[in-house]
Image: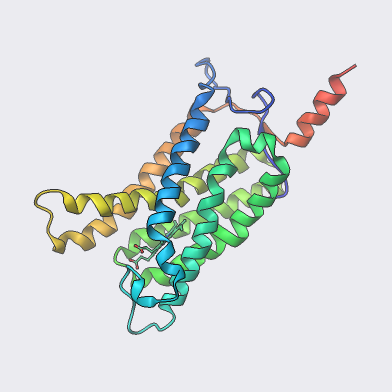
Length: 245
Ligand code: HEM
């Protein structure tokens, strides 16, 4: 990304979003607490699901590999590697305090997040989706993820920072929905009465629930913080400097 963003209503260091409609500011701790939860979930997901794809041994793959597509494993490993970059960088990108304190890092990590994360991981997801157990929800999720991220990048290039923030929050939600999907796939089969023949339906449903749930949370946050003005950190610093005697 070529510019960092800042909620200009936040004090130095950021973290507080000004709400519209006279509801008062969101609590200072809310963004940090949310990001901490997502970092924890992302860490758990990465530790549990990712390492097996870096052994070079296709028999370690937990997903069913296609007999007809010899490159399936290669694309899956590439998807996981790029997805790892996207997931590891995403929480820092949307964390207001981190953006405000380290604007240069926000720009570098933003480029990494998009070009070495979301774009290749999303495209690889589209390649392997036809062989997946829940193909429709996954394809839908990949298209939305790519679309939201491309829109976020276009808006920051156009210096439309408020819209950049909005699209990147959707992109973050779509990146992280994969975690809820995995939680459902791990826990629902433990319920009494669940039979293995329901697994394909569960895999398909889990994607849809993950996508909708996270987009709803993203929309709630955007409305909760509606009215924040978003300007690049550098410009705000110039304004502050100009105000000084
Ligand atoms: C919208 C975003 C994403 C979509 C649509 C997507 C889609 C997919 C698909 C279709 C598969 C193959 C599933 C199968 O064959 O049953 C898969 C597997 C996988 N993806 Fe993603 N993915 C996304 C984001 C991510 C991210 C951000 C990561 C982070 C590392 C990731 C890590 C993985 C892993 C580890 C697997 C193997 C699953 C397992 O071993 O159970 N994905 N993904």
